[in-house]
Image 1: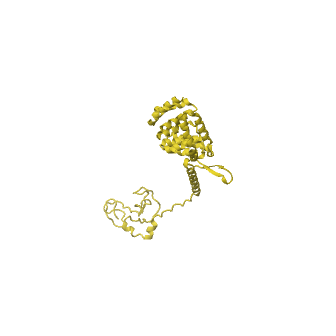
Image 2: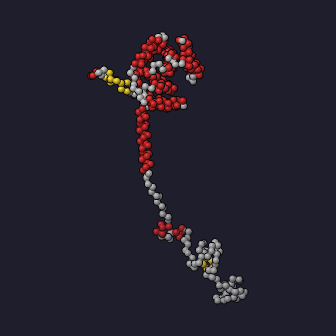
Image 3: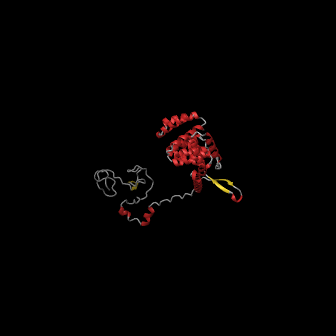
Length: 330
């Protein structure tokens, strides 16, 4: 037995050291810490390594698996598979059929609205048709289709005659042609309230300088009520602002076929004619606008302002000519 004082090796069973006389202590059996597995004397209360309190157990030291790869090879394949954690399968969620059905319904409504709006937003002069009363009787009766285009074509000779009558200051000819235009068969009116809503939307878009939306809204208004002269006039003006003078001219002529004394339609028509090189007809158109204006003084003030401030400087000399012509026809 080894002396704890001088390290002298004594005989087994000795109680005192043969070299220094110190009392020999019998070492207790080692026990392993239950927390870190460090070897301690059997009478220890706290682990020398981690300080954990002793757990009453004399279990032999557990086998700790070696971290080396060479030892890992000794583990049976089946045991290795068990060590690996099995991935948990994601919980299968139920399909939200309610939301899918709602989405399908919304999509169907949107498609229906788009198709309906696309049909309504067709070209006013080419596609809109309303059945007119039957002409004649019996076998000779005929059903005539009235369109904005057909009304415009019938009104054009009278519109031209009005321009000529204005040139010669022939009031009776003006009155006669206005009457003939008013006597023409017109398309049947539609939903005026809905047309007004489309027209208002077009005016908002026009103010925001969104000409595409303005044209679309005004076209909806006219197609909703083919007799809405204000919406037709606004549509022609919107086309004019885009530079599409041909479309603008046709729509304004249809407006005059509906309302041959509408001042704003004649002023729009005058500017379009001037842009197309018909200077004399343009001035006569403006004179007709002045003749039938409810407030002639206000119109003159407007023309004076346009002669100075119109964004299109090419129109400044035209407005000056209009002022001169008005002063000569008073």
